[in-house]
Amino acid sequence: MTKPIFALNGPNLNLLGQRQPEIYGRETLEDVAAAMADLGEELGLAVRHLQSNHEGQLVDWIQEARAQAAGIIINPGAYSHTSVAILDALNAFDGPVLEVHISNIHKREAFRHHSFVSGRAEGVIAGFGTEGYLLALRRMASLLVKR
Image (cartoon, rainbow, N blue to C red; front, side):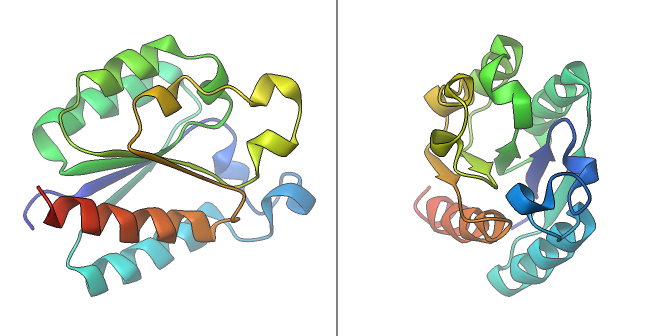
């Protein structure tokens, strides 16, 4: 495959492993990126791993993905629950989109139960810890074979 999968991460995910480890675990985002790169190699997929605390930067990367990516795996963090801009950008992307949440957002505060991104995503993986990223990458591989 020539086009990579964009793995996009939203606000505070740069603090993974340090912030609320009882909820998000002790693995860092660098650990996640390394595991995704290894699995991607196994699956024949390149992964471009990106993180920003800024909504506009995430929108820019989603727009960039229109020409450069085969699919998007996104953990929008808190923007899941607030960002119509990210939803609109994803709606302009033609490839598959998978949404990942480390925690089970449905077992948490009520405001976390709704995600704008879910309305665009082919699938949502929540509550499997950082393993959810690997599950998403495996699913992305199977979705791309069907295209």
